[in-house]
Image 1 (cartoon, rainbow, N blue to C red):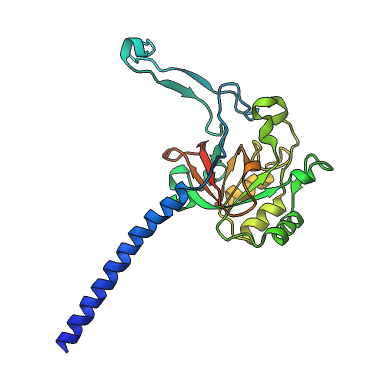
Image 2 (cartoon, rainbow, N blue to C red):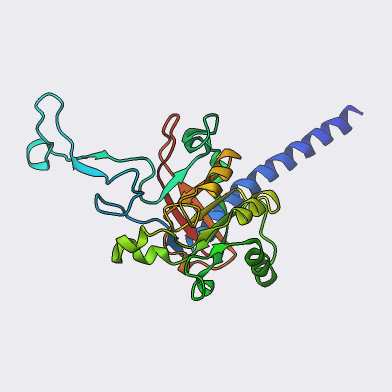
Length: 265
């Protein structure tokens, strides 16, 4: 009996070690696959002159200075240089956590790491904009998308392509226009409640086609989050890509510029 238990224990240990080795190997295999894929930057570069919501104002970037001498650091004098940034958190490509609109909502530092890498689906609204330049994506549009591309994966990140990003540097005043193509509240609710997406993103400065903020208020107050001012969604397929997003871990942060990119299938 003891010999049988001993053999069982030895076999179990060997199986555990084998599984552990396979798990370690699988992560290496996953990295090899990832490294072979094409990456697409979904982030806009920002500066003191780039578009921002009219209620905030432009960023200021200046040379950081010695707090004692008040002289800016330079490579020639100090061997290094650095920048002092003064800007609102919702600047450039940025994340809106629930706390942006909700007193009890999750802040930047409370969003789980596993939500920073997600399956990516892209809704291309550009064919609809010829007839309706300020089209709000609706549930019928999403149903039509699923007929062509299959069900939206649960837990996915849903991005809306409108090609507004092409105006980010080429025509910043047009980029800041109201109204503009974006989401309808019905579409937002459908994606989260019926399809179980984790987060959404879009190219505009806001979620809604007008300054009502109804869709943005709903999703943030429901504990969801979003990425705004996305770029290069025209280079990403409707399905099959993976999105990676990161941002500084600001304690109790209500928003901050983010870096997002897609790994193509």
